[in-house]
Length: 421
Image: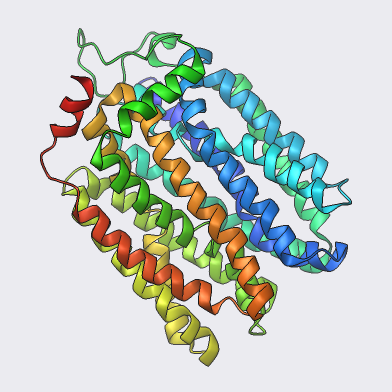
């Protein structure tokens, strides 16, 4: 243990913190039907609350990236986990749709923001000199791990007991993580007398932005980024990424399965099974992003995702087990695989110092897409009594995203040089 770099401890705490936040957000798909049944609320109203959560935790990303530099990683993680825990507890006492919007949309959305937006590149950039792509891949895959292990358990608790018991499990997980963060979390390697993992003695890694006003840092990063064609191409493709993943699949997949008579536990198990391949695909993507052209990786990720989403409605309508299995495998491998190459392209074009804030804005587009699909999917269901059109639309959008990423020019430092000039 003495030879274990403390960066791996930080990686472990961050990994499980992301699991806690990720499974809380992902539980929206399991909770939608129980909320509708118990409270009698319209599905589009419930979807609106979940959409607000997805959008808010995304748009908060750039400001949280700036706060990380001035407040520090440890304090930010404590505050965020405490906020997430508070929202989870308040969910137990809500009685009106607007309660759901405030509690789930605002409080839980803000609590999850740090863990599900910029913490992965921050930890990779400041605690690691080597293996950054792998670290981002591992941290990104942590949401899949939580989905794999916990979503089926939540579904069993809801089916056999109630959604309140399931919320109690999430409250317990958040409480444990808050304690671990309080005991073991550190801000940066120098706090424990270390260099980043893989850094040479005497080598100086890029330092933080400094303690400037948070809002000006976030908007300064945006002003620099919007001048770059790369920023817009990554942002538009990431908008579609969010639309086609946690916005549509994360929020509506289970309900879509239920509409074809698939039981809750079975539907949740399918989603969980995607997590197996998600974990493999995202970790592998981190490894690949250190070795291959990230633009072509994204091209194949979006193309395969688009094809799989187009297949899903036919698979469910026909009850074709083989097609459902193929969708589960291909979509699972692809779900969050886009994140490591997107972060790598952001770091490559904008530099380490600006990665957190610029990626935060790119991720805000991701969550805007997710919010659009979360609410839009519920609205489409209310109008057509089916999600089919939403899934076809997402498949077409993914094919469009595959073209966006190929439009990014290969010259590595062109846009970065333009921005810092």
